Length: 71
Image (cartoon, rainbow, N blue to C red; front, top):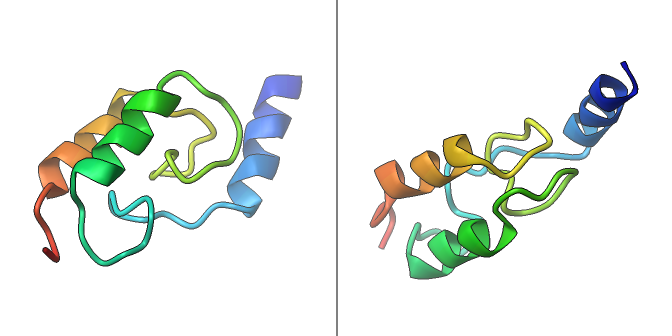
């Protein structure tokens, strides 16, 4: 129950990024590295691109599917 409350609170501070973790307009290797280095981390952060409170395979797939967008 407490873990769900923490994830809910983390979502209040998160804005989905569609894979552009550094918000430079381009989904590139910098964004990929951000997600890879933070993989498994919980709580709010730039690498949690879908704002579910966990940097996981869903975030990695978002970056990979959008890789090259805006570049």
